[in-house]
Amino acid sequence: MTRQHKMTCKLVLGTVQFGMEYGIANVNGRPDTQRVADILALAQEAGVTLLDTAISYGDSEEVLGRVGISGWQVITKLPPLPDDTADIVGWIEAQVTASLSRLGIDRLYGLLLHAPTQMHGARASAIASALESVAAQGLIGRVGVSLQHPDHDLPAVLRHMAPGLIQSPFNLLDDTLVTNGWAAQLRGMDCKVHTRSAFLQGLLLMDRAARPAYFDRWAGHWQVWHGWLERTGLSAPDACLRFVRAQPHIDACIIGVDSAAQLKDLLATGDGALPDLPSWPGPADADLITPSRWIP
Image 1 (tube, rainbow, N blue to C red):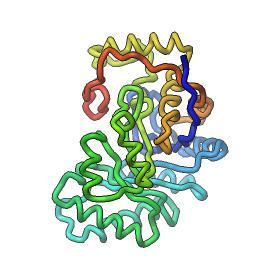
Image 2: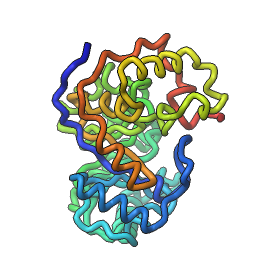
Image 3: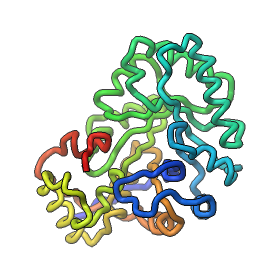
Image 4: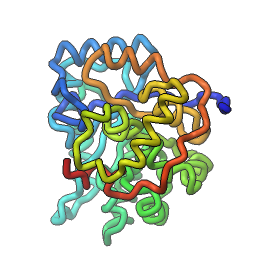
């Protein structure tokens, strides 16, 4: 049995791979400038219009600026506010100005806090107010937060601000953003909902033999996953993207690649009917769905 959904979720090109080594399944390393240019050209030809980057993604912003991103919309993310910062508005203005200079553009589509812990601290309201103040100057379209865990982070975010953009993990093993109602609530607030980690940093794409031994403790999940793929006839990338793109309250899904060939393959997936989902042996615990906790 399959379920048909109207695909409304757009693709966003993630750029962390352009600035640093990234992803548990990445065997090609950072792409050089020509490969970046090829990726951007193919994405633009396919109708992708939005790039996702961050100040902390190595030299990703500089790479994009060198290649040239005229005509693109860009989201970037702020590093944590230094503890000794007295002028928060001035600090954010300086960060935005520097990002725009590196990127070679004059306006950001979105600016996110990269560290959601800032919304749990004593200066949360001041940071939220400063973001809105800088956005009012016209250099930023939407401001918001990049989440780690929706259930933990969103209550704090919503206490201090009405975000215009939220980015969150969401995939077949970590669907909290939708199942707990957060995505629908955010969309009702005119907040754009973008998701990342559709492939769980490439873990869901790995062959059995290539998966590091650290993940053997979830053998039951892998047995279900590979069995489900075999029964449905779907490739892992197709299944992962179909799942995200079938969600009616998700606006965009961020995908990262290190070659135009990878992007071409992904652009050909994700638009079909969604089969009934895998029957997991139990909930995936935090050590599995949180890459920062991995010890491969």
